[in-house]
Amino acid sequence: MWDFLRKRSLTQWIVVSLFVGVSIGYFDPELGKSLKPFSDVFIRMIQSIVGPILFGTLVMGIAGHGDDLKRVGRLALRSLIYFEIVTTVALFVGLLAVNLMKPGIGIALDKPAATGQQLAGNQATFGALLQHMVPKSFFEALANGEVLQIVFWSVLFGAALTMVKGKPKEAMLGFVEGVTETIFKFVGIAMKYAPIGVAAALAATVGASGIKVLQNLGMLVLTLYGALIVFALVALYPVCLIARVPIRRFLKAVKEPALIAFSTTSSEAGLPLAMQQMESIGVPRRIVAFVMPTGYSFNMDGTTLYLSLASVFAAQAAGIDMPFGQQLIMVFTLMLTSKGVAGVPRASLVILSGTLATFGLPLEAIAVILGVDVFMDMARTTMNLVGNALASVVMARWEGEFNPPPEARAAA
Ligand code: ASP
Image (cartoon, rainbow, N blue to C red):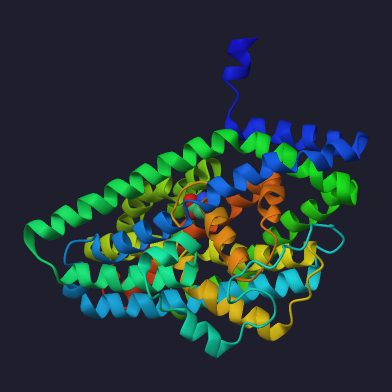
């Protein structure tokens, strides 16, 4: 029996905890509501790693590829332009989808008490945002979980690190890599507690707003899948046409790594095979080796779309009316913060918690969402991988270096 329990995967535990939490909240709403502190503990653990994850991912993304960023100057610039355009489209598709489908309406999450953060509530304006971006102290930004400030500082730090040479650079990179790897393990430990956090969050939410929450969550998952399909059609497909990507060949090559991403919910797990496959269909090694790893910091299409969708979901769930202007400012924030997502399972929840705190939205949403997040993570991770594989083909085309092998040319 013990052996059987021990061998269940985290995903299976989370699914069980979903049912346990919902049942408690349904049959004994008062008990359900009293369990909230158990989910708060989980959220606090997640919150505590927002800063280190953003810092580590961004610095490694910018300075971790040798001198590449400078050596491949033009390619780097083109890639960044492409990444920025595609992920911005993703943000807007997510925003549109969640505003149309309104999956969060009807859940009675508590509105957070005044968070004390400057952007909280409805007073976020573009000017305030800009001014707010630059921290007076990096440690203050870390201590307060100020995502934008952490992003700003980390990007400068990463850029500065590319200018350092020799031993000091290696030492710093080694340190940052060490921190990042350790934090990933930390996430792993925190996730072991996730089933309890999820059960408690759902018990409290169902206790407060009834069983209808499940319908909301189902709707959230469907909205994400729908939005990802729309994104593929309105963004990736036209990109394929413009860059004359041999679509069939591409899909065939990307199929296996995409399956790995889907089943492990880690786009990093699918990266090596994806790189190999892109080379095999004619993307030169230097382009694959630069575009795909960089894209893993800057071009997480599925995750980016998910972040705008989930943030507004949290607002809807707490009955907070977010005017369109406010949503736009949030999109701008996400344009920057979404660049710090790592390609590992549930990474976006960490960034999501930073975003929610910045905009005074309820963090409980995270534990509630986590109950069904595995299904969403599968989809967004797949899109992350496919989006980056495609980016490498597009860049090869743009550089005039896309050389499909002869048999591929015939098929294309
Ligand atoms: N699991 C995703 C990935 O590996 C990241 C996330 O959205 O949580 O790409």
